[in-house]
Length: 363
Ligand SMILES: Cc1cc2nc3c(=O)[nH]c(=O)nc-3n(C[C@H](O)[C@H](O)[C@H](O)COP(=O)(O)OP(=O)(O)OC[C@H]3O[C@@H](n4cnc5c(N)ncnc54)[C@H](O)[C@@H]3O)c2cc1C
Image (cartoon, rainbow, N blue to C red; front, side, top):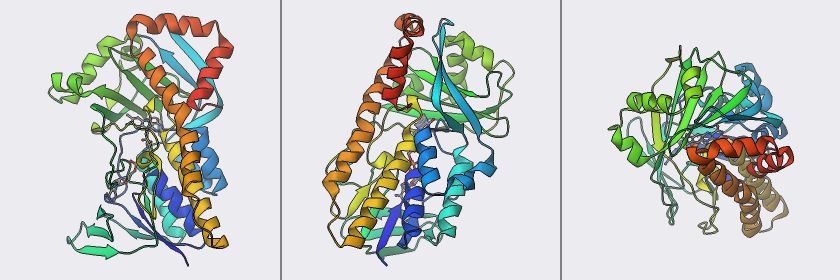
């Protein structure tokens, strides 16, 4: 059987593992964290992601987790003006804690060998893996390596991180629609609110490092400030209580690179990363995994070289327009001076706002 080692069991790595294992590949999946674990994310899974999970027969593994069905996105300017954009196809609100653990279970059931908690420390020549229980170091020589570590940290040309942070926490007793993702403009950035399973809500936002420093990294203090910057956001949280720890991580943002080392395929946020405002990151991670698995399997079966350039072009096509559109939307919503007028204008131009949604990936 052809063999592959996958680094990282997020949406990209776990999906790739399932897709290859069910095609008969010998798959090893390395994950540094113990599961279940929380993860900085808006926890809204796009229609693209749901489509991939359906193709791979994984959707029924997630349904019992009771995700919320999200039918619209509501954009709120700081001055109370807002715009409701129906989603052409629903998204799911589902915690990463639950989803990632279920996908890893699916990979295990499909016959994937899982090394966890274990960290891949190098890809050069051989793959070096440190088992985090006992500190034993193992070296692997797989035929193929899939890098799905969420940041491309092991690539020779690792992407430069931004100076923004992604922050998230779960809350209970949030007042507001349970069937919509809401995005709230604040001063210089924006906040995303998604209802997830079991009556919880997930807050996720990106924040410039400078603003975070002003609050000496006290995330409760920063959050209290954000509630003063958007009245509708404050109203949603009148009776809310935080139901978990704040998590923070550096926010990646970079286009698809064509400098992949030989026999290494980066997927998901190791391949490219966009502004998270559109809730497309996980869907793209899953689609890139599906495309790579199909291409690898095809090349193995036909005994032909993997068409790396073609795969890179397909990835570029997936990310390019969404990256630009998400960046533009984030900028506009983060600029209180223009956000309200923009939302008013979009309300009167339905076909244009539908086109903008399509550029973000909402088709
Ligand atoms: C604030 C914010 C909000 C977001 N909101 C949304 C949203 O609503 N919807 C959406 O679709 N996307 C959203 N995203 C983007 C989404 O989280 C990412 O696109 C997605 O997680 C990428 O999946 P991945 O599998 O590539 O990487 P990840 O999910 O980052 O998974 C990588 C995995 O690799 C493991 N790992 C890392 N290094 C190593 C190593 N050396 N060895 C072993 N294991 C390793 C990690 O522990 C992790 O489990 C958001 C992101 C941020 C920051």
